[in-house]
Image (cartoon, rainbow, N blue to C red; front, side, top):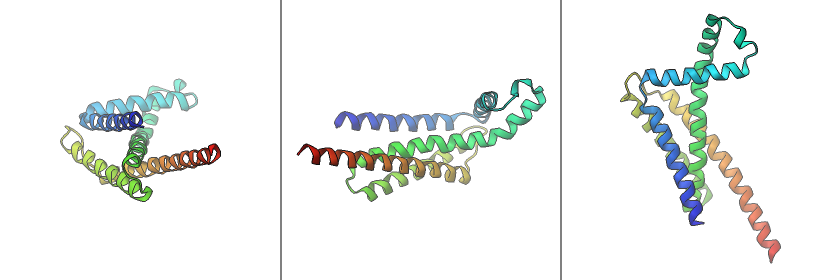
Length: 163
């Protein structure tokens, strides 16, 4: 059990470091990275993307860019919520309290992340991004809670069966 605690704590810390590093990027670097990712997503999912003119490709990537960035916020915070929930359940036995602690932790981290961006050149903090981040955290926490409930139920059935 101790190895699992350490493993999931390390994953949580790594997730936090990744978020921190993305927020520390200046506006140009961050924009170029997400625009490059958006371009690659468009190449994969948009029919005939390769046959479009450069201007058509550029316009499409610009249209998609905003949504890809917001989905990235949502997704990384879903992972943070998932890992925070698992970690809180290792230390807090009451499910509702563990859930609350994990959600408060994620909300505070989202707020601190947006404040951190205020100090990164060409970046700004956004209350909308805090809400998107927190929404992702809620989904990740819910997924972790459901998975943990199934695991608990399975383990309890196994213990009853083994007796």
